[in-house]
Length: 138
Image (cartoon, rainbow, N blue to C red; front, top):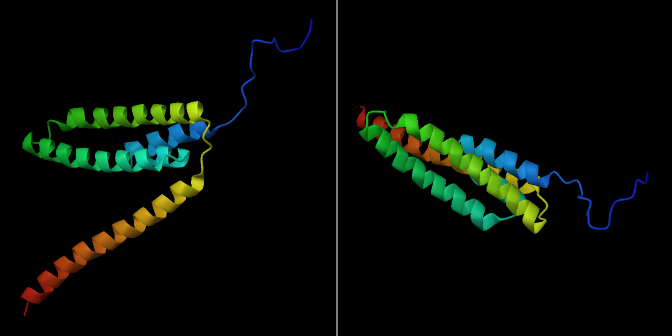
């Protein structure tokens, strides 16, 4: 018995970039930050589109949930999880088909910049509110 690989079988190289992209996309997507798997894969355009699109959808879902007194929340959570899983699978396929190698540096930079923007925005919001409230007291 020979241990040689037949001519028509191409051995696959072991690379976990596709799995990491999928896992990042699903986990961050479940928490409302869709696009991190795409960012890891190096497709910045789709990462930005997924993130902005998901934020827009989240505001629409919030309006629908408010209008239905929370009843729509029963459908919104499974929908968002399904979107995150589908996007994760698409990110995995993108890495497999293009041979892209992920870079965790993109994800780290995005998380740090996002935290800075979020903290700055919250500071402006609550700082502005406290200035308004503080100015109305004597």
